Image 1 (tube, rainbow, N blue to C red):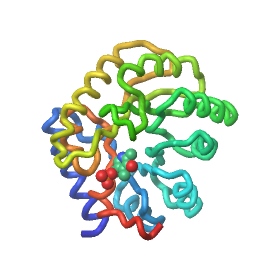
Image 2: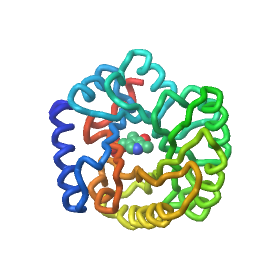
Image 3: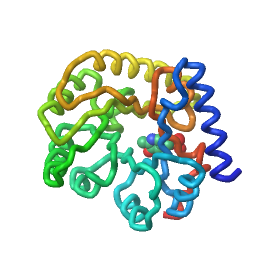
Image 4: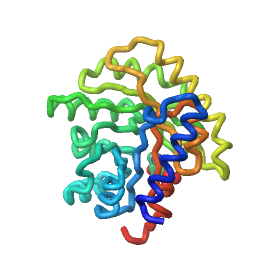
Length: 233
Ligand SMILES: *Cc1c(COP(=O)(O)O)cnc(C)c1O
């Protein structure tokens, strides 16, 4: 199947899952996880109707951006972001999904202030409390939101999570439900520079479960682009 055929098929599945969850299919933002796919494959997906691209690695993103790979689409950063790479990302992407520390917030604030812009971000939650993963523990979220409220060049637009890898997408439901509750609890709170608009969770193996649990931003790679070929990079 071509990228275009796979994208159309996956959009059908997203729409079905949205209807089952009782939400408007158009309210679900599909972010194409484009890592390891070269500029021509990214362009192919955009031509087929992909509206948002999400990249994981700064270097790879800069290379493809220099080749105008993302023209016609929005660009997000979804991977772990190192402090020393923040200056390459702020202002280039419309949303950083993966803000996982106070130090990273400080650096984004500094670079965004320099450029005179406000950077939209999501706070990443380490929902499985995994030592190998980054992200705030649930109990650290209030302090992170209080911190963000003091940074005028950062706007928190919601939460993001990558649950532990499971054999079955359905096994992630408890994590997604915890995220849903966290999202709802914080939507009602008033912090400056914070609006709980987006909940980014769900990947190729579990996006339907994520949508059932309230995700309105899903990050899909292999289901659109096929299995990743890491040997080409
Ligand atoms: C690669 C990646 C995805 C997409 O993974 P698939 O299983 O291929 O859909 C989503 N989110 C992040 C953070 C990723 O790195």
